[in-house]
Image (tube, rainbow, N blue to C red; front, side):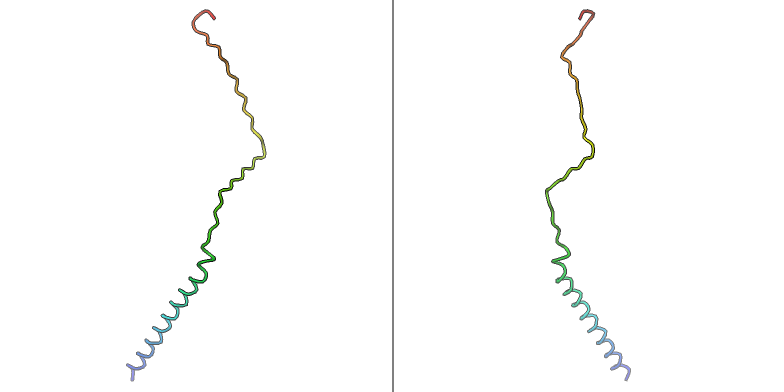
Amino acid sequence: MKKPVITGICICIGLIAIVSVFSIMSSDVETSDDSTQVDLSDEITVISSESKSFDIGLSENLDVGDTP
């Protein structure tokens, strides 16, 4: 009497496990197209609140020795 009850319980647990695995797999397939898409863009936007200026003074004179 105990063996048929234990067998029935095991079969029910196995069927529940199989159904849950298939339902998880089918829900992943349906949502994987929408949730894993990533849109990439090459556009770069640079925003600066203050402008920067650099002044460089160049001289072409070269003084060597005591006499200029």
